[in-house]
Length: 490
Image (cartoon, rainbow, N blue to C red; front, top):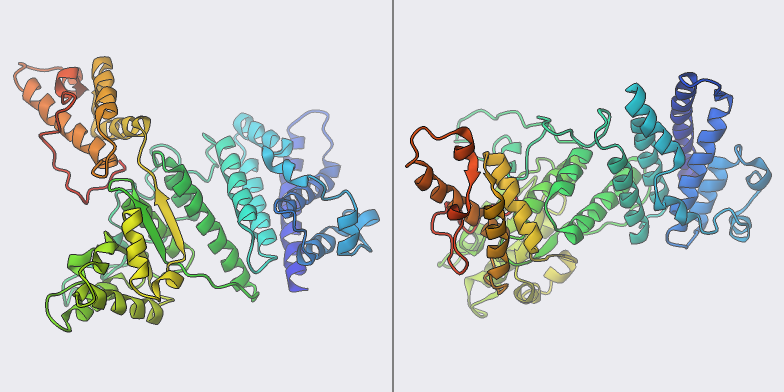
């Protein structure tokens, strides 16, 4: 009965803290009675728990015993002597999942009060509700995908409602904690690149999960990718909760395959995942080490295995991202790429608790990579597809890069940039986010050539991109410092 006991503890914590917030709020409003605050908080907790249990419609015995154990004292007439089959026959769980379709009335009242009085009641509710939701999911050794989806949808709803509040878990604009997607996460490992004999620098503290998920949410486009990352994160949080309580878990491989065209944000998301894995204790350091065939394959017998081991050593404690991993499977049976794959499989097995590997490349070619060794399919069970950016996404990336660099296109330049994106063929060589960055860098170079001829230019002239600064349709960017490995997201 350890799971029901944990459920009871989470429910009582929710009731205790939310009731305090309710009483505090009622004290500030005329004519309000806070004596029923605990019962109101218990009803809110019951609605949340039963809604989550109803999401996948399974209503297992473990889940229902958790409800009975946690809420028996709050709903004694229906639960004090109930058994799981009694709940299934009752109306207590019928269509309860619909309760999650929007933030509750209680939460919306807390948000309104926080805006008016400067309190932080919505944050109290958010913290306890998320803890309670993960406790519900932890009732099962393998929580359902729909249940994890529901938790992440609830998280997003509550965060969106709290936008702008000082107490919001989502970092406020201009906040200096953390860093953007282009962060070199290898610096999180104290000895990632130090010279021999140099003392280790202290590792930076792990960033909060909410901050990392907020950064994920802020990425342009990639909605399906964000959903998959949130699911992976939610599952890890549930498994961590079960581990902490001595409950059995269903071990799953952490390794991933990223498929999609270049410039679709695979490296950016891999960096965030490395930090998420570190914050949840999956890896110790959270650095991201990038490599490709050239970093793993040698032209001499026996040297390839050594190169693979060297790159694995640098990535141990973090995440190894193998770009264009399919290239390892090309060249036939006698190619040294096969030796690299065989060595990689052994490294993954030997360092299963120390290293996460992400293999990235084009969708069709990555199928060849997985087929190259019988051990790869089971070790890379999940594939995340990165779709091409839409024209609107490319415009958002262009303007975001410009805002950070202190440039803004005028109306004519905006129209020309959008038309330029629409004209680019969406073939296999389509550059996606890198294309947007290349076009921006080219525009800055052209603008500099134009503005340098103006005597004493104004600040507006120095920061405005005009139509003349944008490449013509059919003309590629001539001036760009961006190479094929540059981040696609700003």
